[in-house]
Image (cartoon, rainbow, N blue to C red; front, side, top):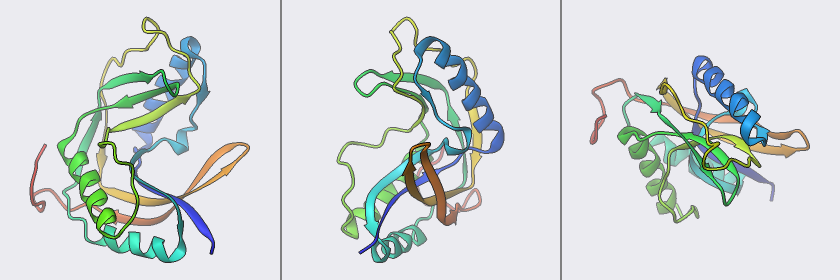
Length: 183
């Protein structure tokens, strides 16, 4: 059985990715660490881990049933997790949480094993960083982008880091078509 390392995510548009990558590069001067490549910046919705091709097909069927309106995501704060030395950008969005929760619920119902901890919207900017409380950078202006789709990604690890390939894409509904929470 061939296993694929996979996750669902949203990707920033080119403008937001450029701003976030610039923030990370600036933060690296005080925190050190490994800068995430601009093209790999993403916000994970659900991490599947290693799954077979058959299970990937099931994950895609779950994604086919997700109905959430498109929305604008605002990352409005930077944070640092000392325990795993990650500098991240995050924000609160009811629609992003609704999307992540809908995916998690469907995946769990299909017997995927997901992390038990609650969803925390964050995008890793630096790994192996060493920021002190006084060094943690501050985000001046929120970084926003329109979220119009979510993707299923295969992750391949190499010496250069992770390489991602979208193996499925699902558009979000036009505004007004969602059942539930609004931003």
